[in-house]
Length: 519
Image (tube, rainbow, N blue to C red):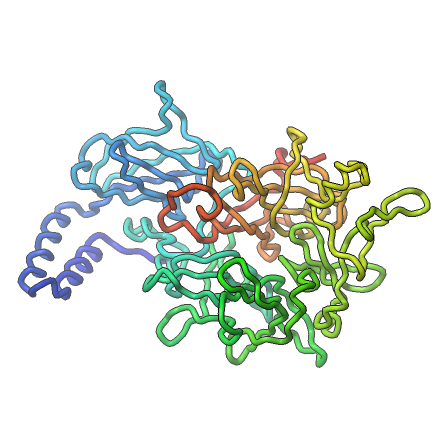
């Protein structure tokens, strides 16, 4: 746990200014003396605001508190704000309160907020009603995860609560258990020294909760792979010019029986022009990926994708790639994984037409001679009359309204508590274009998937590429954890949330919640 005190902070501030050559040592000394004089009269100069979930009492991250003159403070991962605004101390101050999926009671004029008596060293608690089914827990990546708690001298769970691995922002996570640890990888990464940071994949490890890692309800202690200057080291450094993204991360034994960490890589020019893709394998000694083989880019679907799962069929084990519905599978052995021709697609279509058996039922099958059937393509088959609505596999609808839900990305995992396969996916074109998260369940990864429930909403803000963390499941799978990328990108919102934007945010979902009924 990390804790600081007001005197420590005063000494740090004074020392910082005294050592800073601001024109001359004399000016620096005067500034330091000024700070010490004006802050030392209060043992704690900050006014602490703690925003909590009225249902659980836990601090709520990502809550915006705005003064009448539009000064905005955002709660840290503990739900705290350290408020210190000259001119607004020792007086009553009104704060507007807003947060994605949480609600503050409105007054008679329709204003959602509260007035607080702001005093140095004082504190106040604000309770919010949670509208989301899922509970927002903390930010996983980026700078200042516990910024305000550190200023306030409150204990925090992370080893590096304000800046870890010189990371300010990270896009879209891939994580897998490998050799007794969790290996984490992200896409484009922002760093302090320049807006253009690492575009060749960033990586880290963490301990599993049962092996000394944090309780996932508290956070994740990430140990980043860094260079000799402390910057994030590129995980795909020799893959050629351009941006390098990875997905389809998995573990598999190679031809010698050794466990290997393998991923699909995609090298792009800019953000929308793929140049090549293939398989890469982790080099344990050098802590980076190396190209294993290049695949045919014109058959891009023949590769691991999304967040793969293992599935047995007919006594054989397969690696199945949901994105978020199952699109490909390949035998779970080294020879098949590295043979692009061995990948199969899930479909009921051949030559543009639905194939039916002698009983008239669609022939859903894994096949090597057709491409995967997407949700959008399946819907067109229903609309054209080639498929009946009850024959479709991937046409999710809102369990409350019956309206179609088009999913963009997500993950599927078996859940012991529900005894079913469960899906966490992000809607494309919802209230926020890529900001609405849905829950669904089925008896098989290949469906049929029918009804879904919205569990998280983000108002005009994206939360894309969500993924579950089954290695964090608790109480026999009753509590599950998932995260996604919180960003203004694609949302149409020109305003970025300080510290949170372009970072990973963790949620927890209680599968015993009656609101999750999808029958």
